Image (cartoon, rainbow, N blue to C red; front, side):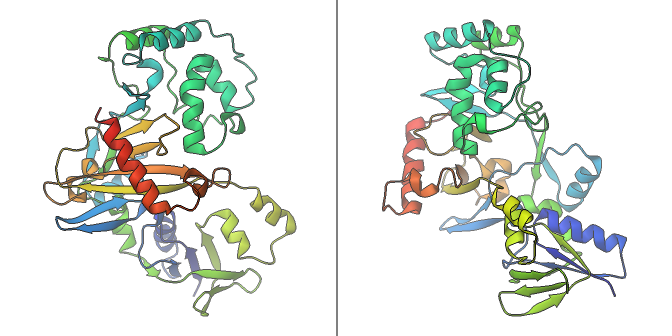
Length: 371
């Protein structure tokens, strides 16, 4: 019997195992998951309270998949709530509709004039753009780019915009490029149409983003608490931290590339060196439950100010009321970090990180008020 091993019980691993099982019904398909639950990055956690349990996904998670098969799979697992995007932005005490470049209405007049004037007289090069900073300046001018886009890039990606490329898969479709008329209209009124890149976003009515794939998860076999420490690709043997082993014929990994290469001591030196040069961001989550139902005003919002450490805040209870006890609501703030911007460097030296980020987030949310 062919043995197909899948590493990781996140959405990618669950999908891979389910479809492998469909294609090879006589094979043994097993997922090995290092934790004691399925979901991975699309999973989450409960926080208990005297009002009941609050569910928090591992960061925001909303589906805007256009593929009809994906939508069908998700809907068969859990009926979706359909949200029309209404994000807003916080910038130096002002709340702006999103995207900010064509919704400058609530900015101070002097700043609006500078941003619009610079956009209209944009002399930045428009061709042979070599990095993200050049792309931003070509679209929005220097003033808006330096005061908005570059600041948010540092917060969200943890590097300067010039360190990122201009891959059209993520740049072109996700950054709205307004006309002159849209910029002027958005500076004069906040009664503007939504120009967010996704017109609809879906979330499971029952709560928990992972509910979208629960039907698939229930049809496959997952071995929990099985963390791989060594992969022998020649003998095709997996060794786990519990000192057990398992053989395989086909291996499918959903683990981060730098991590799986560490498990392969026989990997070529060039591969190991390449893996060391792969970088990624991580996110620290600050999750808050409230004993009132109407705390969040929007599904999510962005924060440009760099002295405010969190880059984005969303509401699990607005995604679905079933994520919070009856009569309650919730928010979750996201602080991004990486090897370029370690989390420890964002807090005072020697401080308790959890306590510091919780206090920082609560303090700033109170000071920011509501949009």
